[in-house]
Length: 412
Image (cartoon, rainbow, N blue to C red; front, side, top):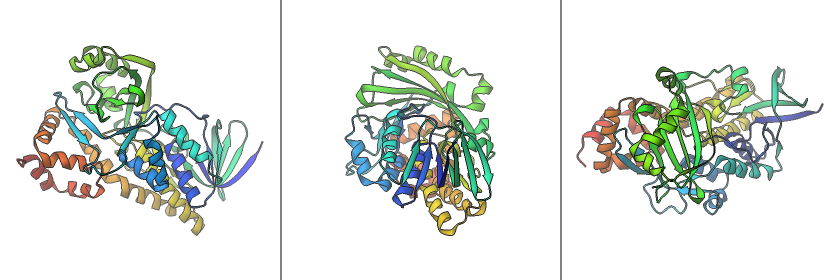
């Protein structure tokens, strides 16, 4: 048996854990990162890196985004296409300003993006990474937490940053947070090649089909002409409608008149895989004595778009900031850790709440059809939706009911 002492133990080396470790290293703070897998490893996901992910990467190192822009395994993406239940499409750019040098977002298989981030982690002397190391148990002690692995190692730490994903044992067994069907989604992902009609600017596609509301069917273009294709639906709706996600997915490709044609020459690559998406449509206590939860372990996935990577990376940033305060004040209590919850939700909650309301909107197909139709004919509404992807301040205006009235009933 071996025993390792560290001020900071990060469980999981995905985007949340890697970001936390890298931000700590930037502050000169050492950390230990433990992941049960060995990299590169696959992670079931939509594979899209939003503007928020790009923002965090820029905060880490300006050269990172430049590197992604020229990397063969990363595809620049410039917007999203929303397809209403009636089939009408709305193309929304991720940015309204065209002078930006790099793409506002990227698409990359998670096996490639996560490994790229982990390589950055491995290059930092402040970070000690243990791959293929699974934590079996957590035990509280006077000065922190002891994490025991299946192979007999013990890590003694003042702070645990739990980034161990949607099925986090730490979230369930230590933080005591359970998944709730109303705030949980299941997604199904498959890789394809030779899909017809992929967007010239690599817009991601969200198809709000009646049979999956309030979920959606997605098509995300990938490097080398591939596509990440899948469907997601809220768990409680799946149960109520007795939906078999895999059968429904196959039925869409066979019977939807538009998608059937687009997939007529497509070839599936690899297996169809199912995964859980704990949604950020509810505020939770994501810290406690000697710990913080990040990423999917903190249940921060956008309820409308399903985005998780950008929110995960932001949680890593804020967790690193809180670690610095804790070490400076020598205070690791739940009360002091609460600052992490407050600051992270201050950054993300308006977006998550708006997305939750938009998720509820698509329960009413006729209303969603109306909004898409109006946006296609109303420049102000179209630009406002686009600005939501790049202008954080605009969300404050969304609290005013008159703002919606002017947008939806103005003529231009």
